Length: 241
Image 1 (spheres, rainbow, N blue to C red):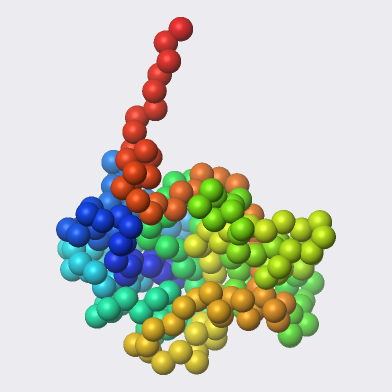
Image 2 (image 1 turned 30 degrees about the vertical axis):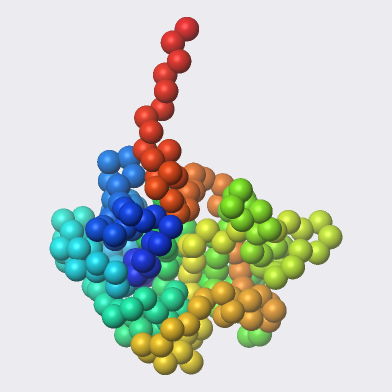
């Protein structure tokens, strides 16, 4: 499986830090955000990595190089201006190939996420290993988290049959963790180089019963502001008896 790290965003809310440094290169606990991803991907055996970039993208290439320092092979998909998530993925499709691939946002902090669990998540089987009917095949598989304070309404309801746009009785809404596995066919109708959002594509899959997912319970942070970054980098206080 190949992986794509999304790194093209401007990071407006993280200014002024992102005026001189691309957001994925901001350090959390001594290491750039994007390096946490690369090391965890390599640990999981996923070494072919594609990174898109726009704002200060040359700094990302200079810092990471070809990936050999991490045991990875990194290729870059440069965007003149950020193309949104789906547009960026569509532009990178020639590098991603014909098989399902993993996509993770470069501005989340997930130090303990096991990327090895992503492989096989969109196979043509249900949760018991039985083949799906063709119209029930998952085109994408999303990892969800409990709703953070800044997004209390959530994105999708999680059920045994997949992800829904609205919760039914007994179901709960969760927030998309910005980690997902996608079949390339999801992006085939997007003209490379055009702007396109991912949300409408996922909503359509949910309506058609082709969006799978699961809940991730580990440490997860979506870093949006300098205050959030500073709080995460504050050393834990040791309270003496």
